[in-house]
Length: 154
Image 1: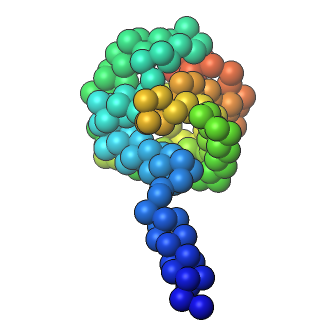
Image 2: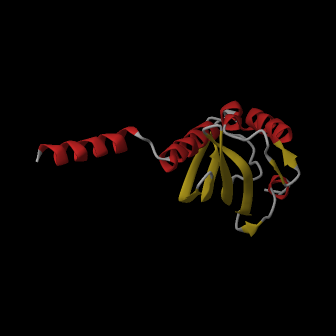
């Protein structure tokens, strides 16, 4: 009787100690969300793969864009809503709606308000990194590229 109980206890302890990849990814998503809200572009970029290359933006260009926006935006209220995460081995996707509102008297920037996104993650050296970020709509209008989103008049 004692051996089955010890086996169950060991299994429960192992489950408690071993963090699933989904749990690790959820933590990364939360860290990105907090960093974006604080306009901490360095923290956001820490979660982007150096192999990022999408819609004409590579890691270096995306880093410059993020740095420039952070200097103009200040802090923002950001909510990620309707998050749907799918993990398949070493790859994952996050589909979500992002609501962002600048604080104070800052000018309205492209992409503020409501937009929908798909982020693709890849497990690299034990860390989940963003390899692609694609807006699908902004302000009720369809968009297909990050460049298109940044060029939208608001």
